[in-house]
Image (cartoon, rainbow, N blue to C red; front, side, top):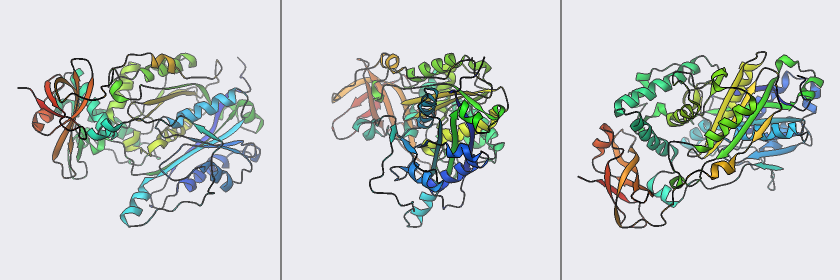
Length: 493
C-alpha cells in the first residue's frame, strides 16, 4: 500500500532536563527544539508553520512565540493547550489531524516545567525569572476546553487534591481484590518497582537509582506516608526541571526535505474524551467510561490489538491510574506499564510528562516495525487522551476521534444540592491523611446513601480501623450540622 503524502509522521523528538536549579521553561523548550532540528536539513526547519506548546505552571501567555523568536523561525502561528496530563496527546492528535487534512505541513511541539527551580527560588526567598513577553501576548490557537474539575464540596473535604482522590480510589481497588491493607500496599509497591527498573535503564529518567518494592512500601523520613496507602514513592514526582520537543509533519514534507523513511515514526490513530466532570456524579470512582471508549477507538482505528503492541506507556501519576487502565485493556499486571519509568521515577513535570513519553517512544520506534500505545490522564480520572504510533508504514489513514457523546450517555448519579443534617450511608471509598511527621490526622470518606447519592465526609476517630482493616462497605452515620464545613462520618456500632 502506498503511503498517503499527507500522513502525519514524527521526524524527531528529544527530552531534556536541568539539575542545576536554574531552569527556565522557554529556554528548556528551545534547548530541546535545537536538538531536534540539529539533525534536519535547513529546508525542513524553514518549513515550520506552527509552534505549539503544552501549557505549564508558568506565567507565559504565548510561549510558542518566544520559542519561535529564539529559533528565528519567522512568522509562524502559535498554539497553547489547556491544563491537564492529557493535553500533550490532545495537542499531538489535533496537530496530526490538521496535517492529515492538508491544513498544516510542519509543526514543532514542545513543553517544559521547572518546578524544582521554582521551589529552590521560593526556599531562598527569590522570585523565579522568566523571559519578558508582550503585554498583549496571545496564541493563535487554544487547544482544549477550560473547565472546572472540582467544586466547593470537593474542596471542603480535601478531594480536590489529586493524591487524596486517587488514594480513595485505591481503597475500592483493594476491596475488589479482597486484600488486606498490607497485602495491597505490597502489591502496588511491586507494581511501582517495575517502573523504577525501567527508569534505571532510561538515561532521561530523573531517578535512575533503582528502588525495591520494600523501599517503596516502607515509611521513612524521606518516604513518608502521604495519604493511605500512598507513600511518597507511590506519588508523582513534580520536583523536576524537564522539557521536550518534537517535530511533526506530513510524510511528503519529510521525504522532500531529506528524511529517510526508516527514520520516521507514523501516527496511526488517536482519541480523546472526558468523563463526567463533577466527580460526585460518576457512577463509579474506579472506572473510566471515557478511557474505555477512546482506547477501543484508537486500537480499532490503528488496526492493532493491545496484546501485539510492543511498547506501552500508561499514565502513572498514582498506582490507581495504572490499575484502571490495566483493567480496561485486560492487561497482565506483570507487563511493564511504562517505557520511561513513569511519573515517579522518570519524572512528573505536571502536564508535560506525555511529551517525555512520546520522545522516548519516538526513539524506540525509529527504524523498527514496532508499535506503541500511549495514554495521558488529566485531573481526577477526568480527561483522557491516547495515541498509537508505529515505526512501520501505515496500512490505513490516520484517524482522530472524540467519542464524547457516547461517554456522556453513560450512567451518572444525581448530586445532592444540600446534605440532610443527619443520615445513614455506606462507605464506598476512603483514605487516611498524614502530617509531615508521619502521624495520621483524619480520613476523607466517600459514602453512598440509600438514594445512591454520593457524599464526601471527614472522619477523625477510629483511624486505626481504617488503616489496619478494609472498611469499604461498612455503615456510617453522616452528620452535617454546619453547611460551611464538610460533613463528618462515624461508624455505626
